[in-house]
Image (cartoon, rainbow, N blue to C red):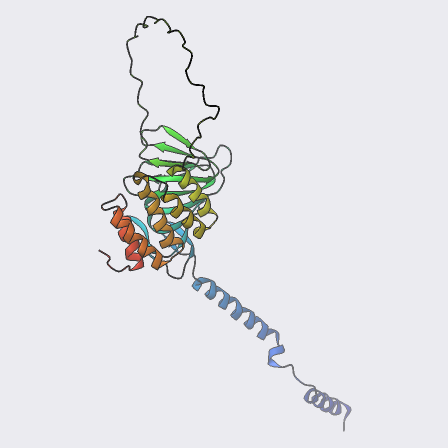
Length: 318
């Protein structure tokens, strides 16, 4: 056999014996695989749900029983708990029961309900964050506070930091930690100009007469003053801020017994709100609301009480 023919035969036999690379070891396979993975990632990120936005506010956290809707008035939380964020302004609010809130060009407006606000600290010279309410605006440089809006009035309690309440007239009322400010805030009255009163002629002092009885050596005892409603509400907000809701409820029950009827309604309403929205104790809350309505018929919080009873599905709801 000629040498050239023999060389070609050996070359073909050698090629037949050597194993060819598997299909998954070829470079073309890895190129196709990388392209498929990249395409799958793109599709995943496109279909992944983004943070839900409600009326321009980002829903950062929501309970399983959250019921919320949007309408012309704003974002209405009907049931459950949620944390809403105005990312651009650094404002976070957490509802404490049903509320309506709306994002506006100048700030976040609490239309109705109760919420705890937390605001990121502002740099020196930066404009304050603004929470709008019926009686004016709350200007914040970074703090934590609770706001309750009742439509025609409301209240704000400062837990930490510093805030200022700006009336509609433009005048400003500073609020310190632990203080509660209610609105509408009465404007300071202008001092009236009075004509100078001529001084009264001095009367001769009567001569001192010796006392027939010796003065008692014991000073009269000073009665212990019950805490005012403002003191009770300040302590209540501290307990709420610590999430010590059961202790707050017991504190309110004890404090109500020492308050006059004129201030007892507010404390009774706060106790019912605690039982309804924080402790979520339907039995105690329904019993309390029934007593509240019997004692304070057509009270200041009648609509809020009815909403709470509806949330709890209390028997005998009107």
